Amino acid sequence: MGRLYRGATVVDPVTGEHMIQDILVEGQVIADLGVHLPTSTHEVIEVSGLHVLPGLIDPHVHLREPGQTHKETIETGTMAAAAGGFTQICCMPNTSPIVDTTELVLSIRSQADHFGYATVHPIAAITKGAKGEELTDFAALHQAGAVGFSDDGRGVQSAQMMRQALIRAKQLGVPIIVHAEDETLSGAGCMNAGAVAERLGVDGIVSSAETVMIARDVILAQETGAHVHMCHVSPKAAVEVIRTAKANGVQVTAEVTPHHLLLTDEIVERLLAQAKVNPPLRSESDRQACIRGLFDGTLDMIATDHAPHTEEEKGRGLIRGPFGFVGLELSFPLMYTAFVKSGIIPLAKLVYHMSTAPAAHFHLQGGRIAVGELADFTVVDLSQQRRVNPATFRSKGRNTPFVDSVLYGWPVLTIHQGRTVFINEVTVD
Ligand code: DOR
Image (spheres, rainbow, N blue to C red):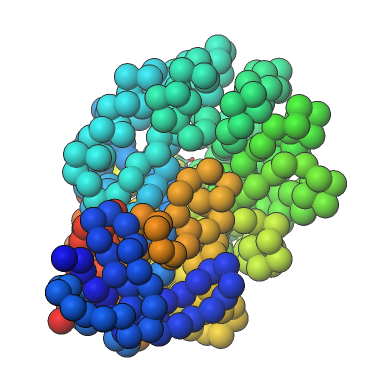
């Protein structure tokens, strides 16, 4: 006996089609897909009026385990993923200790599998301890399941070290995932450099701190033929560098976050540390450039950079509080409300950037609903309207600048490898 999800609008991000179909799940896979499938002995789940998307994939999440479990754990982070409609996430290695051994890669994967809320693909560190001094054992880490390499949270300051990393990553066919930050330029800044930082009397982070390293790594990727992936792109100039690099055939991909698409540094004046993130929220012209970059394909995918911190830590203020926002539970409704409900892009394009593109560029299964594929999908209620209330989050983190935003398009049911891992009782019968 299987489970038949009946009457939903199934979105295909590749063809752009939306079709009312039934989905039959048997075990972990989609066994059949079609209009009015026979119900026979199957358990029927009525999902008419709702939309079914391929499981969302987030290429950039901080799970904080091991070592910072007061901020998040593998269990709470993957529960948050499921609640946000994500069935696969890639997690960053800036835990304590840093993920630079095969034991840690294997342990994260097996813990995530044990809880079963979402598949977790670890990203291992480029350098031991993320100190920028000595490369990790890429081949062994990849063999253990690392899907890419990054020192995210810090930029690799040495061009020579980055060049060597790219050469090794190319041999394995995996991306180097770049946190672009030249520390000689970013210094002790706590927000974007500009008029708001001046008004607040705090040190700013210039855009070039990011763009200089993106330009450097594009050049190194061109020379080595490696795949370089740029994290959380924020300045206009960086979008332009990536656009030119793509036009020149460099194997570069890039992600952009909901917060860089929706907010500017103006909000820091009101929210202070609650609006502190790295790279920082930038100007309106940077924000517009990120939106254009996403729409024209310069920026390939949307990533949350889910970075949970405690209220006490964020309460230390703009200068001393940590950088970062939680994102898993809000990303889809934020993007849907801003860009699809408003009629700017079709739903299928948003789903492409939140599922199909990360699957393709990180060499993961998924990104499409089809017979024989793993049953990873998300049912969303596009008409459901809710106000953001961090007290409802599964994540331990409450740190978001989007408190009280009224959003549409909430996930109501998440299916991971055939199992129901999230259900929002409000809507599903
Ligand atoms: O805002 C951020 N928070 N940016 C990063 O690069 C790291 C992250 C974190 O780990 O908190």
